[in-house]
Amino acid sequence: MSIDEMTEDKLNLFIDKQLDTDEMNEIHQALLDDKVLRERVCQLKAVRELVGYAYSEVPPSRYEVTKQRNFNAIYTKAIAASVTLVVGVLLGWASYQYSPNAINAVSAENTFQYVANHVTVDHLQRKIILHIDSGDVQVVNAALNEVEYLLATYRNAKAPLKLDVVTNKTGINILRPEMSPYINRIQQIASNDNVSFFACKRSIDKARKKEGVEIVMMPGVVTDKTAKDIIPGRLQEGWVYIKA
Amino acid sequence: MKIVKNILAAYSLKSEFAERRNKLYRIAYSWCHDAALADDLAQEAIYKAIKNAAKLRDVGTMDSWLYRILFNCWQDYLRVKGRNVEFVEMHDDAQLEHTESYQQSQIVDRVRASIEQLPMPLREVVTLADFAGFSYAEIAEIIDVPVGTVMSRLFRARKNLKHQLLDFGSDELVEFKLRRVK
Image (cartoon, rainbow over all chains, first blue to last red; front, side, top):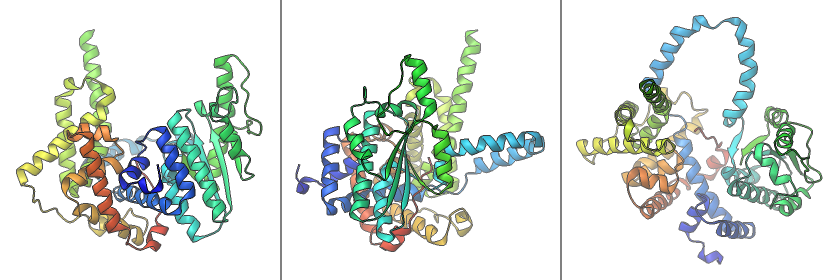
């Protein structure tokens, strides 16, 4: 497929991940080489994100207001001080898990636009965590595409970037040489000094228990911390969180 | 025992519907830009869903089934009122109190105004895809048209919005902070 054949329709299908893997990869490759094409994709993604953004805050519904009022009336007095501490501690982790968008969070598919916008405005070091918790082919492919795109964009812009790829759950399998189809690609990415790969210690322990064998990771992967140890701390330090 | 099981299942389903009420409200709001109307539509959709719960054969398709009911409520409303509904003002300043800054509220205003100018079928599809996050196939199911029609409407909507929004001022877009609420 030549660049000229990249119709607007095709690019729409690309950003919505409606093409097959080969076509996705073909366009991704073309994006690395063609600035105009990147810009077209960025514009489409920007439109998509703006629509989502436009309704992320809507006036509260009467139902929610009433529900909140009822809840407050019934339960406020019942909340005992003794549980406050426990709730506070739990909330720290829960808010990380379910509301990462509160802290500089962008979804993986937003990365093109995010990076394109920010590289043009400053050359401060960007610190990004990419979190992969699934071994799903589409998710992993998209994530690795994004990583390569990020690295290429920052390299071309001569802007500093620090990228930590944190895997947990079945996501750790992408770092296992004996079973990962992505291992060569990941090794290539890991050869960049500014990229580190982490495999969650807890997920490794679970896999070991389940499979009854030693879990071997690709050389260079950090395995002595859990995702819980790594991610919340980075978020507090202002890293951008991208969920694959 | 079977009766108790059925009651529990019905209760659980009702809770599932209630949990999704806010999402229904938000998508309804993106179509009509009227909080009171969106509330009524979401309420009506939940009522109809509870009433017709037995028709939901696969719980896995609950989301698209619920949105389809909501979409039908919306279409009924448009039919009664006529296609040339004059929509009320999108929001007032007080309702924007949650937005982070004046600049961001301006972006929101601008995007909503652009969406409002789209023909209704395009607006419905673009909000279902880009706000609610449904796949093409799910949208086709919700609004009962072929997938090809969904694609064509979505692409036309985005092309239109791109034309309207991207001469908005690159500076403002550069500063635009991406956030997503699902």
